Amino acid sequence: MSLSELIPSLQALPRAEKWRLIQLLVADLAREENVIPIEGGRLYPVWSPHDAFEAAGVLLKALDEEEGH
Image 1 (cartoon, one colour):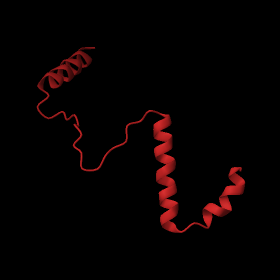
Image 2 (cartoon, one colour; image 1 turned 90 degrees about the horizontal axis):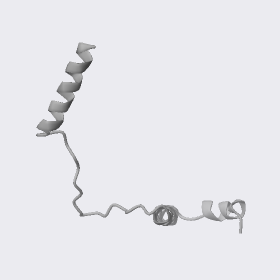
Image 3 (cartoon, rainbow, N blue to C red; image 1 turned 90 degrees about the vertical axis):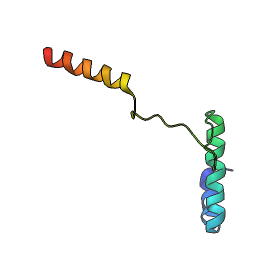
């Protein structure tokens, strides 16, 4: 069955089923791309420049070098 044949049936679906279809398609695409889905209720580390003193030093050095040129 082609996409053009599916579209009228998909448009006739109730709202909740359309959302479920979207979720299924996104999950399928993520699996194909080897993307690990984000899970609710789980903690994920996020890098922050807060307390990144070494990085601040590198940036300061780069700015000093840029001003010198």
